[in-house]
Image (cartoon, helix red, strand yellow):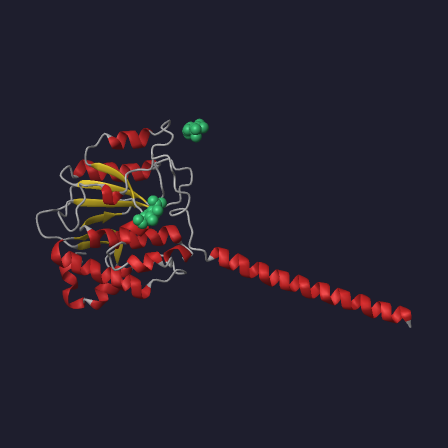
Length: 268
Ligand SMILES: *[C@@H]1O[C@H](CO)[C@@H](O)[C@H](O)[C@H]1NC(C)=O
Ligand SMILES: *[C@@H]1O[C@H](CO)[C@@H](O)[C@H](O)[C@H]1NC(C)=O
């Protein structure tokens, strides 16, 4: 009798332990998921206090809202936790070619991570690029950059940072935001220019990827029409942004929506 009671007690204890274990696992999972959803990331965290982060782009007085379109934008959106400004050879080549071919343009290389000249040994590529008077390196504070744009609240609510492809999506978003804010030309960091940008005609175009497809690695939007298109792109992004989809090309949607006027800005 006592033995049976003991056994029952024992199995009750085991059941309780299993139950507690399950509860702990569920709590652990919830905690894990909530940490994953925490919109903190390498861009906004770890603010360097040494005053060596590059000048914030909004403090660069050369760059004026909707002013001249002789702007070329490159966005470097990888995570850089050691805070040292860095570009690889191919990226440097792309930037140099844009500067060399377009001496009358200002080339903005905007880093979303808080980088600066913290360790100046081994910066040969950066030093070489710095010798061009029209190349400007700046830090881009996403929160600040989106202020007074249609993306202000969207950036604040952190949806971008919960994306599965934060760095790639940040680059997708910033190309439209830069063109919305300033107008000019966006180039991917692997585009090497062999001749100058055509500034004769009012432009507005996106680079062709093939005879059929328009890509988003080269986009020029300027003037009133350009701003109007950039506005459609930014708003389309707000409506259709999807953090689990890689490489969504918002300009396609715009092309579709504006079939009537597409030829105006899509020179294939
Ligand atoms: C600076 O960079 C060099 C070369 O990459 C490295 O060997 C060195 O440890 C770095 N110094 C500091 C203080 O991070
Ligand atoms: C970015 O700008 C926001 C708004 O001005 C500011 O609160 C934040 O501290 C800045 N972050 C960094 C990393 O500079």
